[in-house]
Amino acid sequence: MASLMRIGVCRFINKNGINNVLFAKNELNLVRTISSKIMRSKDTERPPKPAPWNYKEKSYTILNYWIDRTTSRLDENSKIIVVEGPVAAGKTKFAKELAAELDMLYMPEANLDMVYINPYGYDLRQLDEQLPESCRSFDIKNFLITPKHMNTAAFQLHQYHTKYSQYIDALAHLLSTGQAYKSYYEIRDNTISELLRPHLVIYLDVPVNAVQENIKKRALSCEKNSPVLTKDYLSTMEKFYKQNYLKEISKHAELLIYDWSEGGEVEVVVEDVERIDFDKFDTQDPKMKDWTNLSEEDWGVLRNKYADKKDFVMAYFNVPMFHVPELTIEAEDAKIYHDILNNAPGEAYEVGYNASMGDTGVYFKLKGPHRETLPLRERNLQ
Image (cartoon, rainbow, N blue to C red; front, top):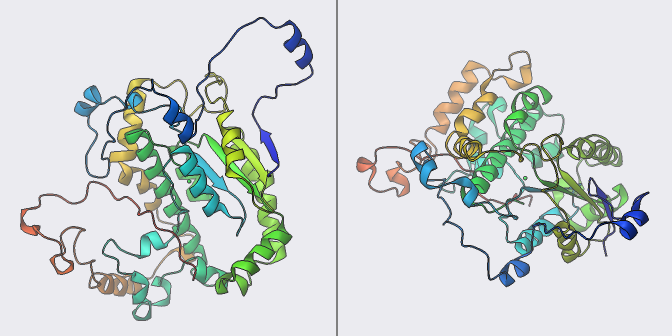
């Protein structure tokens, strides 16, 4: 059974715990917390929710606001849960099982396969041999094999760009359907304030020695022979997570940390999640402040922002970084890149307008896709 350390969740017994128990008034407070799919199925008095809003295809305008209130879609399970942990900790398996138990949408870890494989299934990495070195694809597999490549800096930003894009999709999904999601410093600092921080972060703690054993067991060539995944690197990542990321995020979100050296039982985690009262924080508390004290109008504005105006939020990434040579491409290389890309399968026109790829009714369409939503595609490290 996984052991647990909780940060930010009230303890039952503290220095005045005995007195509180013996002399407290008999008051009963009913609190609605995240509930499992089994518990929700037993709730016969649960009011029906509106049908999910198709935010991928439909705009949420001021007119929709009056007849489709965002709060009518939100319930105790409308939460953003992020699963973190070291390499090969078992995050994917755990997150899938947790999402199933809590009846939430599972989103795979953001990865560049979501970007390089276009909507028609063509992998743009097949064009690399025709492209200048500075314009070639570079993903996690390339980084693990050649960490000192000239495209490493660009890879870090592309990876963050993809994570940012996916998190906006998660917020759009939550506010449009009510179903939860279980998700470079200069650019990060310019963009991170546009997002709502998660309600809960679950960290699967695995010591470095166990991580190295897990890497050996899953025997992925890009990991097994990688000059990156050394003991020093993994130790540095562990230290950063625990001393920086987890410490900072615990100021804003609930945090559960489990010893996952030998795995654990998802049912135990579900029980712990069900005990957390996410509504106990007031407007003066920094924790959950992104989600508290919001009016119906505030919810509507946020829903419109993440569902309909994703391009505007993503535009922060368009600020050029000319002072970083690794993040710039020569004009001649850029021209070659665009010429080759525009002739790749499915890249000649906007999605839905490529007759050569099987799109129909091209002459009768009046507009392009409503928004760009990343596919729920798992990373392929084989």
